[in-house]
Image 1 (tube, rainbow, N blue to C red):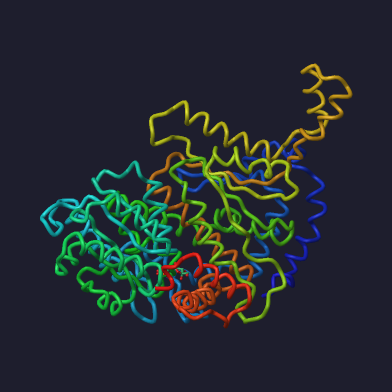
Image 2: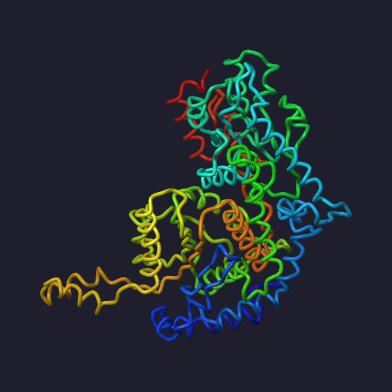
Amino acid sequence: MNLLDQPAFVALQRMKAQELALSLSQRFALEPRRFTEFCLPFGEHMQVDFSRQLWSSDVKAQLCKLARDMDLNSPIQALFGDNLLNHTEERAVLHTVLRTPADITVLLKGTNVVPFVHHELARIKVFCQQVHSGEWRGFNGQTITDVVNIGIGGSDLGPAMVTEALACYQDKGIRAHFVSNMDGAQLAQVLQQVDAARTLFIVSSKSFTTDETMTNARAAREWFLAACGNAVDVKKHFVAVSTNTKAVQAFGISSDHMFEFWDWVGGRFSLWSAIGLPIALTLGFESFEELLAGAHAMDLHFQDTPFEKNVPVLMALLSIWNINVLGLRSEGVFPYCQALKRFPAYLQQLNMESNGKRVNNQGEKISHNTGPIVWGEVGTNGQHAFFQLLHQGSQVVPADFIGFACSSYNYPEHQRKLLGNMLAQAEAMAFGKNYNQVAKELTCEGLSTEEVAKLAPYKVMPGNRPSTTVLCDELTPYNLGALIAMYEHKTFVQGIIWDINSFDQWGVELGKKLAARLIDDLADKAETTDHDSATNGLVAQIKKWNLAFKD
Ligand code: F6P
């Protein structure tokens, strides 16, 4: 199974020098059909252009052979049925069921799990209707105007990103707020903006033990009680989303006000479940269903399309080519769409928590590179910050540009300029500007030969920097669902090729344990001596400066 031993991978490594001998400029000059060949449609609303990647049809064929040799189709099919893909936590991985239509059967250990999903969806729908119609009211009879989601990681990033992305679909008169951080500043800022009598708190946590979430939830409940004064009214203002019924009840939220999901849904894959409640409450249940429908369409494409035309599979295989053969270990994602401001942060958890692993499925240390550093920012803001490095830096960062032909806002001039900028950045990365072009331009501007020789080297843009452009007609719930599912499946395929479990996250545990000890140390009047000298020294200084810890 080792990637490095795969004949197709060895062949790809051998092809590297020859492939790099041709630049993107040369390739486009030699291949008039390059765009047609490498730009793939997904349905009628989305297309993904891979033509500006540093590859050829030979590389593509070899990558698809690699996927076939590694029997990629088996884990893909497993993702849609009974499986134990998350073997280190002894859990199935079935987030795709969350967007599966009701008339389809998916058996897990002999039980069809699709009805569970649709039962919970029906509860969400009823709850949304109650809130939207004003049937659900707060303690003094007023309707709900604000929803505060308290959760972190997968219980925050997905719903926060989608709610913001589809803000222009929000027509239910409900504002969403998100509190995730252990820094009380975030909770304080949100609480300043809301009225306790008209606010619904959603405590969202798969485990219902995450310290940030429970600390914020307790503080929110205290704040609510201070404003309303009556413990029986908590039930009108607090609901929970979790897999842990006991802990939800222990917090004081009854099962009637708890929306359930299941241990076969990983936190970072959970926005399609009741974790998406803030989405349904702010956009309406119909938009939430559209989001699910878009993701389901991508699931079908992923499951049924030959690798050569399978968009998420090709995205993943290209990242294997870039990371493992070309040595490009970081991936930039640049949505030219302000509404997708949180999309890079969402993708960071999705990909880096999934594939930031160094041990394979047999528990052995892996000898090749795995998960890339994923980062990004919306265009055009990024252009005025770090794009300099993308164009002229010593590191090459493959980029995903994401754009929408039509804007949901009526600023046609902005939209034209926004898209013009996106296309220009991809063009500049791919083709750059060579010394002769720069020298000619400077000469035309009237610079002397000496001045040209002095300035030109700084202005040369090497080009030949790979990018993919994802283009949609519009940012609709359906298209967003498909886009997110596309990146989920890319992440999954990367994990399969690298032979890692993309569904656990043991790496976050040590920090949590150490934090618990240090939180106690900070409250301890005695000097802290049982850590390394740096930690002890920093604890002492914090205690010296923050006298509150001494009380
Ligand atoms: O600490 C990492 C993590 O476990 C993520 O995987 C998860 O999305 C997040 O914490 C929140 O977990 P929970 O939903 O259980 O509060």
